Length: 530
Image (cartoon, rainbow, N blue to C red; front, side, top):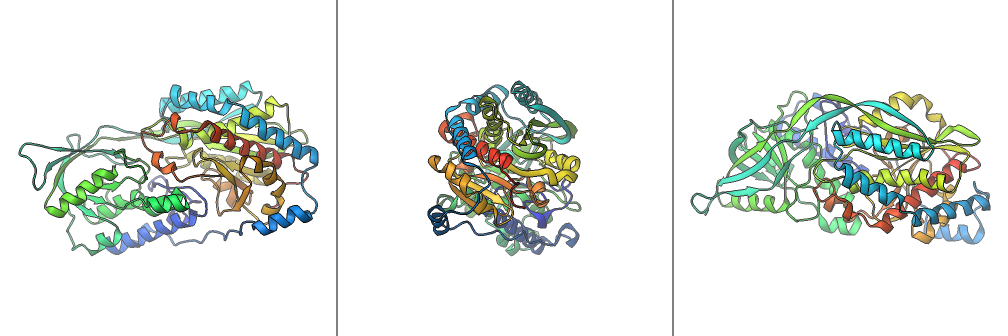
């Protein structure tokens, strides 16, 4: 999904321009840069009008993480006055241990995924999830508000791919291509389209083709997901490199005259499962059908087209229906001294429709729910209000977040901090924070509380979450668990994003991080530096 905070240089009208990615860990800028380069490459290859692009903007420079030396010396020598008393730090330890021991988040996730299922914006399941989460928060004694927001209503239809002709085929046979429509894709004719397949690996390959080389063809962008990069540095880096093709391929393909586009699935697990996600269109460029195919089928097409002509039949019948109303679920656990001051804990409630949205982002919702649950269970009301938010329609345009900023943007001075969890449920090694460099030293006592669960590494990051990005841009300090994302993109946006992929212990660790950091922000002597 393409949005203002994550990809500022590509921010056109989000209702006519939809796109795929997001995420964090210093790779925000890598993804944004990759997408900017993608549009530059497309414009060179196919002369997209300059009006369809906007100038690049540079995100704020991030502060360096607190060094190990500074942390050690701070512990030995003392870091001066801190924002919490020994009693408050002891309360954080109680919250941490209670969150680790309590199965609440796991039980809630099982219900969201198994009982309610996939929660695509505008679907009955999305509304069922809104009603369920609101009821659960009311049961805890929180003050609940349903914030109405318009959301897209895109419905997946038939999606099939079949090879009809290729070199060396047995007479009268066909081969199945495993694929799925990209989010927001337009449809083929009801009976599909039949065309020759052309394969390119990247934008440069497309640019190098003679004019008209892909006219009327089904064009495959065969950009591989870098598994080694994912293993060494985290999946978000490999994702940022590859997802630009999912986002911008329909523009590139249409401007080159293709009848439809395919992209190699953006993920690391080669089990012949496709990865969906938003794609994008721009005004003035024809909209053509777009689908993701599995890595194995991408390799198959690359091999066969290298031997000779390949003909394929493609059928996609998605529908884009009128926008429909939905809701952000907002639940306030009221503060005792400054109830007007707010600390947000959040995740997005919607999901894609192939799986059941366990890691993206049911996990983020339930660890945020658990923060309220643990505060209620231990009878703790911090000085400031802890505000839970289950965002709606993050995957298809962040409409819920946009509505929230429209309604509350003028009140950002009262928002002391905002947390979002939206990178799965892998082990958190600490916390990412966006804001002033002083946040690192200020949070050091909190890091020490989280050290027993291995979550003591606090790092600066340009951004921390898509839905809270508007708050970050308004100067609100923002935070996210720094999670192990090496395998996240094996399941992300696939049929395999299901409950069994979540490790109960690691989910509890994430709940502990969210709960402790939320309490620390809500009960500190003074608000976090900003």
